[in-house]
Length: 193
Image (cartoon, rainbow, N blue to C red):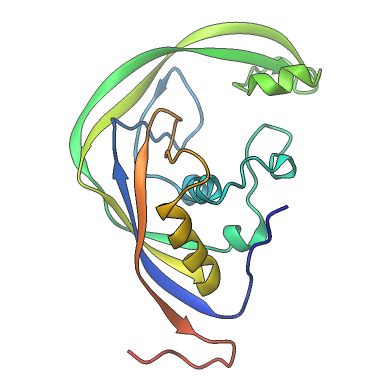
């Protein structure tokens, strides 16, 4: 398992997410028309997990097939400073639907890998419309958290261990963590401004 730093040294930097292709960043629940928006903190943490190569860690996936970040990453926070502009269009696609034997009649969209585990029954396809944006500009966030972890993330964005995307896996991006600086040390003193 990959070891992540966790210290009392805090830092902050400027996270820039630069879309390479049209993006679809859906944060809400899935429906027949999924609207795109700004990446959530959970999605940014997933992006960081890809850069660090943590998605391959099988213990990081919860029972619904979603990645649960380890504590040092879940303690990072992101404040949205700027969103890209650009036009929107609708993209129609097929989604696979599976029904959990323990969840009753409510179907959920789930990973096909869960079907192999034998915990799901029922199968079907449904057409969904996913909104996409052709972004002009960047998503810019102020990133806060463990300084040493942020420095490791900064390096990982230069040489990511997996494809970088935000939202759906077709929404490829480039990411940079700039202007990284310590804000406090384990002695409790702030850094000079």
